[in-house]
Image (cartoon, rainbow, N blue to C red; front, side):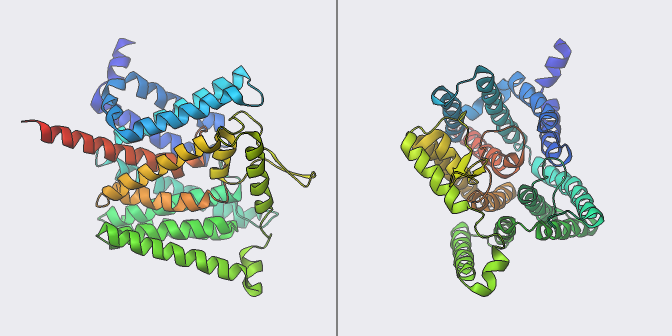
Length: 400
């Protein structure tokens, strides 16, 4: 037993172990249908992280680390003022917070090695590409009743599946830019084409626009060398996309194509969630354990607010929402500070996909392994690693 613990705490074996467990955790999302089964690698990952705490204690000196801890801790604390404070559910929320925390720390520690992200990108592109191909075969072979492509594993919801496929597409393009052999470059292009096809067949307008923004962001990041110019061009592009979308929505000829099901009651859901939180407590919200089902017109019930930002506001009030925005702002600031780093370019592209998409989908910022780990916590871990590297380099410069 001591030998096993000793191996876990050795830096070389830890890098390999953590890299493997991070990869297995992400792959499990697109392969295994059960979230509980997909969580097993994350339990091992959490154990490995805490057994080797001495390897990452220096990250305590970064402000982002404490922002993440405070936000996760506050969301857990909101169990106290939830509608029903059930001890079993409280324990489940606590475990979810630990798993998210461990994943972010593991990614940050793994990213200290320059080979980690290129290797992870290559593996996720290949495995993800195979899953996308199987999904396409399943779509054309069976033909879903609704006519929209649905993913495998936990990606059976067409909108969430399409967003994760968008992340895989970004990984494949990132791999294309970092590979040297023609074979791997061609393979990356083919995977990107398969992913784009799957996203198109999903029918998710949110995924269409969000993936477009994420992809263009990555291409711009590799084409533009100066960070200020990158920010100006990217913001201009996103502004044009928003204006184009608004214009098309108000045109009768294109409205039905863009929004074939109208707004899917989004405006009614959002207004109800906001008013409910204002009535409850604008500062602290309803609490994370409170049922977040939204009832519209007394007849239609929706499982959640279909907006990650509103979900955070609903459960934790303005305090939680402010913490969430502060974490996002700090992550983006760190990534832009390290714009020349290829890891930062990848993380920026993933966030460029994730942040707009969260306006229309997702509701759990602190959950077991799932799509939010791909879209939010992975780039957060990369950003934390960049802050960690900076603190280490500053310390080395201070030495005589």
